[in-house]
Image (cartoon, rainbow, N blue to C red):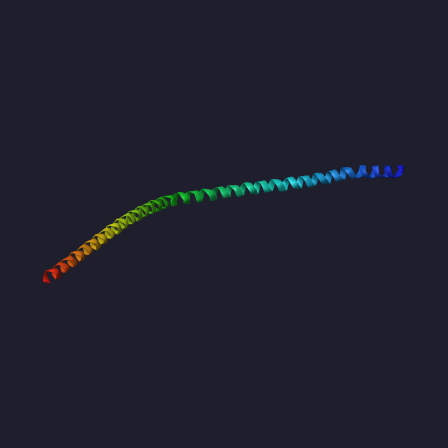
Length: 124
């Protein structure tokens, strides 16, 4: 058993520097890939920043027409409110006028009926 452990120690002593060198190479490759990824990410962020700046300029150009549309919308709302008020007043006026006309017609009918009965009584 001791011989086996001694042989394993010799193998491990020879393999350890080789495995360390391989691990160091893989670590260097990993760091290089990571550095390239960071550089690519930085370039993408610069491109994205310019795109966002262009979109911001476009939004500033659009803002004035949007303000005009909002003002127009408020104006249309005011006109609609005034039209509703006017229509309500016209409806109330028409309703009152029709009620007055109906009352007037009813009074005239009663007066005519009373005159008719008085005339019939006087003819008798």
